[in-house]
Every structure is written in C-alpha cells, then in structure tokens.
Length: 333
Image (cartoon, rainbow, N blue to C red; front, top):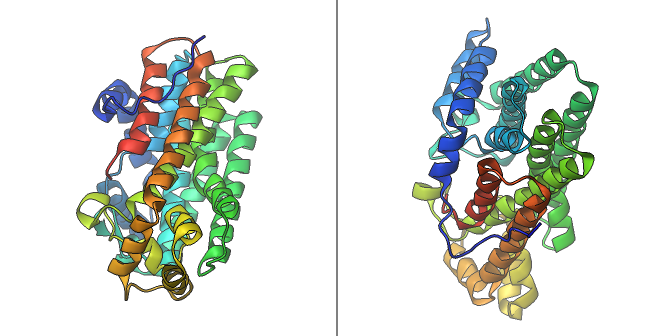
C-alpha cells in the first residue's frame, strides 16, 4: 500500500475531522460530565471550570477516530476516551502548579483561582477516577497499557523538572521528555483503538507508531508556538516556556547556531528565567534559524505519522487521522 505523507500544501481541515467524530465525542463529553460529579463541592467547582475551559479534546478524539479506523462498532471506546481525557486533564492540573501558571487556553488556571493544594488534589481525583473506569472495562491488556502510560507520564514530569534551568539539555534529552510527557498518551489512545477493533498486531503497532509520531509533532509545534504566537491565539503568553526556564527545541537549536554573545544571553535566560530581555532573546532565536529547523523537525514527525497509517484499511477515519497529522504542524493555537 502507498505511504501517506503529510501534505504541507493542503489546509488541515480540523473542522471536518471534528464533525466526523462529533457523535462519539458527544457521548464522551456526557460521560465525562457524569463521572466528574462528586459529593465534594470543591471538586465539582473545579471540574465545571475545567469543562468550561474548553479545549479540543484531541486525545480522546484520536482514540475514537482510531477505533473507527479499526472498524470498531461497540461502545467501550466512549469509556476509554473519557479515561484518556481524565489522565490528560489531571496532568494539566499538576503541570500548572509545578509551572506556577496562571493562564491556560486564555482562562485563569485552577491553581490561580483555588490554590495549589486544591489543584493537586483534584488532579489526584481525576487520576483515581480514571482507574475506576479502567476496572469497569475488565480487560487486563487495556489496563496494563493505561497503567504503564500513566507511570511513564509521571516520569516525564520529573525529567522535565530536572531540566528546568539547565542550558546544557541536549536534543535527545528534550525528546525523551516529550516522549514521556506527551507522545505516550497519544500512542496509547491510538493503540487502544486498534485493540478494540481487533486489528492484527502489526496494524495495532502501526496505530501506536502513528500516535507516538503525532505526539512528537504536536509537542514540538507547540513549543515552536511559544515563540511565534501570543496569548490571544495560543492561550498563554509568548515566552512563557523561557520565563519558566524550560529549554525547548527552539532554544536548544539556537544555542547551537547563535554567536557567542547571543549564546551567553540565551544561557542566562534559561538558567535564571524571567523575561528581562525577551525581545532580544527572540531575535536571537529567529536569527539562528532555530524556528525553521524546529518546524522542519515537527513536519518530519507528522510525515512519519502519516506513513504509519499506510498499512491500515482505507476509510474516512484513516483519512481523518492523516489530516490530524497535517493539522498538528499547521495550527496557530
């Protein structure tokens, strides 16, 4: 079967993909609302805030599309999609506390409104709620994948913490963080769709590979947006990663190519955080060609994601997964 390279010339029609998944996602959203409910008022308040904050629900959508591409016709994918979203949302709550963030998707974060303790504890509630849903599925293979994924995400969080303020982080070390923090959940979402559909192991592995490559593409593109977007489109302020001392790929590439004076400024910014010379730092990053190089790396992973889909049966769902690979590197928010 022919490969399906990402097409940089066509617009990534995210709206079409969302429409294809709409019926499934309505059921997922209903289940999320139902299972977020608690007798504890504060949990409900924070849960309502999270739901109202929106977001594209990309990870659960990936799962229902992968299940569709695998020919699955049951209803377990609704529960799995909710589990995936709960795991993701719990990591966001914890991330915002660690990063001391006060803005996400253009809205105040839960920790900014209710404090760090409440955010951490409600994140724990979401983790444990996801485990309750896993048990209801009563499938040891599925539970093992999700348990391993959750543990790997936690490792990624710690790895990232160790990298903060370290101007000597290598590209390999950066990729190790985003594999654990981001890509593994994408990979689990798509792999589980293939398992539900009863695909041959080679095609299940292809769906996992697609998800992993898409996760790389998505996160690298997201890190790029931190230097080319703004709070009005991205939902956070430009330079937030730099302010937090996070050495993401644009900075790592810039350090390799910048002149000695620029390197000194970049290293100081990473090691000390803050945005005292943001304009000069961003100019240094742009002058070094790091933004173009970062975009090329994201596109490479998006192309690899599309190529992984080649072994799957042709369908509108497979096409939608390919479109998401395009979208991951073309989006502006």
